[in-house]
Length: 304
Image (cartoon, rainbow, N blue to C red; front, side, top):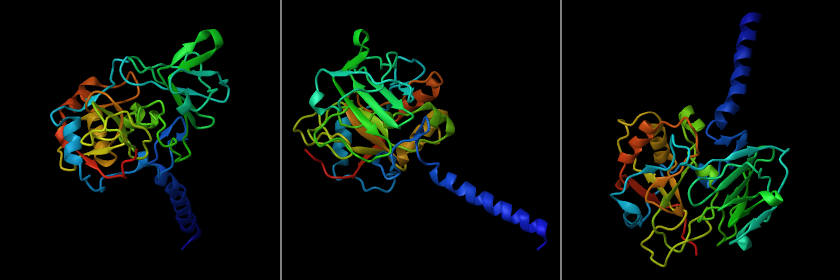
């Protein structure tokens, strides 16, 4: 082998070595340079091969067999949950908890006065500090302009490098004790062609139990109802060939990563981050998917 050919082959080999680590991490969800939880985290686990839950039929019926999938976000920016990114320059401010302070992570939090607040009744505030990869989430948040802080019913701080859960029976900014931002459908990932995490969704009624990674319940003693943290997936044989664009990307993720029951609400409503580039014509295709197209999978025991 002559020197030029040897150099060329060596160069190709080095290039391949440099590419391999990147390929190995392409399936990790990231936001603002922060990897969203370790690869082993429940949110990031593909569930295509998980066994169907023995109570799948009754749980799906309770959520709504004839109710259709509903994206709770779109072109109208009053739908969806916004989030705010900050860096090390953002100062911490006081947080006053008004309902569930005993189950909340104490402040201060680095939440700016102009942080985006979710429209509607829940008034979630989600702030990601991209310098530390810590996620701060508030429920029913109100800015206290007078003292440069915020009031909220509850709040939680999430280290995106950790698999740590909330303490058992503790809530978060979500009823199930789960983080919100990791379960949102985000425009950037859909535009790139793939979602690599489970998706947050709601059901009308739930039982008083939870499955990890959930840690909290907001339901009744009726065990025919789904527990918080229940994982469901779009059935493998559900035909998605007629769906287009953003809808098809989302449906592929629902087959591979599924959805996690995170709160009480309208049946089969799933949440996305606000973004003006959503396409309602494509998202509305998802409203043709019936609840009967889903099945619950077993991911762990119900806790109380």
